Image (cartoon, rainbow, N blue to C red):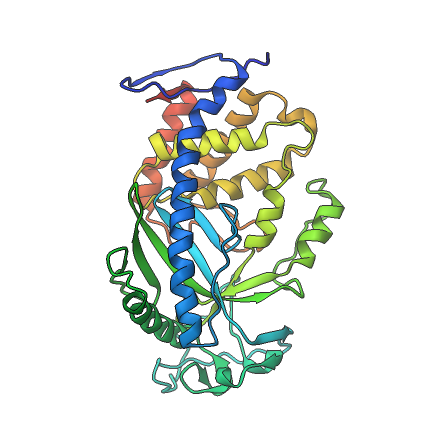
Length: 376
């Protein structure tokens, strides 16, 4: 048996210690979480699918999400009770990037603003109807379009109204509640058999035909991932999310899903390290329903570490590999800086509360001084 360093769940106890345990005992740590999350995903997916089918019947521009199990590409689990679900937009195909950008800013009612509110960041861009060779006539209507620009805030206003109406028409008022928001994002609380899950519903333009110029990836002379996987990933394209008032946000969920698939085909322990780190983050370092550090941040840390340490032998010893990941996470949290894996000039922690990050950093520092895992 291969000895490894992990913790197991012991009901009724609470202690910290370092253990050398057998390989199968490592599974005891992640099985309860996996069961709870997979159950929540299944229940939430059925409810949101029913809701989006109704929305799609009311407005052809919105497409229902599919029901494809726990690994649904439209569902991102940020924490056990915090999901992000993308709702595909229909009738926008044949995308091409604009050669010349004209930054225009409006109120949601269409009144032009004289100066820029904010220049688009690296992960954001404007989107114009003329960038698509084929589109539904509805995308030219003024409820979403201002002088040729598709405005996310206007799309979100319509989408929120449809969500509210569809909850009533689907008789889901006892299971789904629209949450108040200071911005135009659409968040709902979904009641599952185990707990309440907060879900952000985000309209998304799926662009499976090209790779954005802003994502200059892979970087030169990198051995991970393989060239075959790189070509597969880039062939899947990207998405644009309605995540702000003016700009659409680049999203790479399909690419990230492929990177996570087959991560340990060489017999390594990358996924085990990720799962243990995620469990420790949720139980000890950054607990709560709205964690400042999410599973998405941990996934990005994993990608950067896999790229820096591409050799199989770097992922043979669980203890060494796990501590390497935790040190990388500690560095990013301490510096309030975590680069997006595909768009390098984007800091994923830029708008995160620094006091909360410092608290997580201090807990990570304590752990690294005397690495022990929590037994709960």
